[in-house]
Length: 101
View 1 (cartoon, one colour):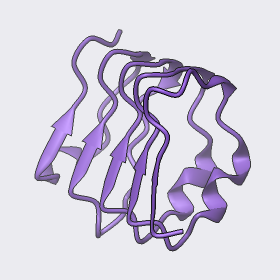
View 2: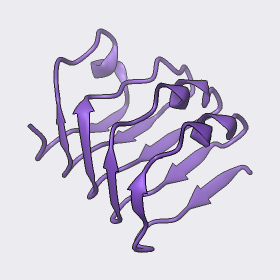
View 3: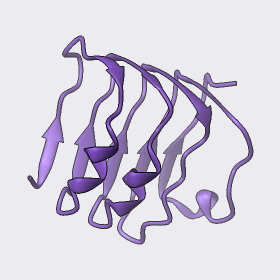
């Protein structure tokens, strides 16, 4: 899988830890669904990821920032995420964290 776009598909439930198995994915868009729970740490395995969009869901917990060198866009807006920004997050070309806690 090089790219996966499942935005606006009425998906519900938590993100599975198997999300981290998509190691060759360059783009992952799960925006505008009803996903809840936390972002699994296994998402850090997505080393080829260039765009990661989880906006407009009901995700909670700490703000997730994968230290991935290929990442160009991280959109976590309109969720219930909180916590501190990790070092390096401001170096991303495009990051959107608005409308969180």
